Length: 417
Ligand code: ATP
Ligand code: MG
Image (cartoon, rainbow, N blue to C red; front, top):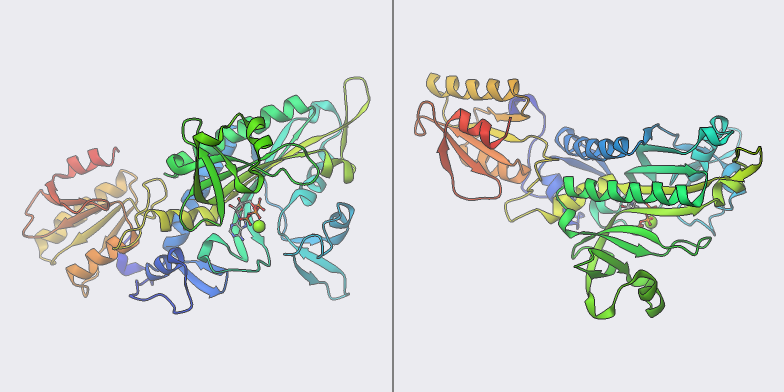
């Protein structure tokens, strides 16, 4: 697209009340808008990043057999009462609302209860299982602190998947398949190297651990102990000699780090299915419990982690897999030669399926265009000018400072199209 066609502008300063670096950068780049503390709108370029992250997550969930659906934000009170999660004394971060007649409703903070309700009509016999369903949708939580930008929102985007299995063994298989898919997701998003599967508390109704996916970062709220060789970690919350033995980890192999939880997977046993009356009949006509698992990824939190983790003093530095555009094209001057050259590059990239932003603003000085390209974090920069000359393009990667002159076909090689 052409820069002159968007209403988006970059700004020098983020709002004074915005303390988190991820939100400061994203606001300055024109990617998000702060509506109020913990609540952010995604502007067109920010939405592109979010959609790219969603797409990676979606592809990996589909690969393991996940079926996408979309559940509701408004939720009936009765199902939450059955599982004892309605009471504010039990779940302290509910947003609740009311119908005109006074009936109380929940504003979705998670979806274990509603998902059981939604699949119930379709599960009778052993032939209907196993299934995996997931959605990518907004969650609402009345978080006490909302000072970490999009890392901790009161409204945020989550991918939540739920598995339904016939036996513990079948559940374990689904669980490990999802774990492997999570590893792929974080690799594709560029944080595979610093994200660890981390044993954590499984919750009050299971003896098992849950698994968090923790990305090492100074801004993390969690403390984890990492075994670099095994590529595993244990959360400080459950760090005991007994648990180390259970996990086959040795104290002397572990390094303490701060980390951000970018996802987690939980064994739910049959707590929700039993309580809400969802069972199946086996081959012998006998009623059996359904073993569930749940699998979350903080989609908008991941965007915040990427924004903050890869930033430098000039701005954002998006990994290729999520960048809003892969190439920013900047023309210096508007002589007929330069315009012809730039148009050719722009059209060729578009034909090749490369997302390109042409900063065609006539009023902006080259220095402003360069600064914006850096702030927005677009991986590849191309400059056309009389000085670079006909048939040549000045190329610079966002992560480097030196430029080089290349041809259009060399550019296409760099972009592997
Ligand atoms: P946390 O301990 O960070 O509050 P959680 O245990 O409440 O997370 P879940 O309810 O399991 O997390 O949600 C799944 C994922 O959603 C988390 O791993 C995290 O990445 C993300 N997430 C949770 N709360 C928020 C929030 N307030 N804002 C943005 N992302 C969140
Ligand atoms: Mg929480």
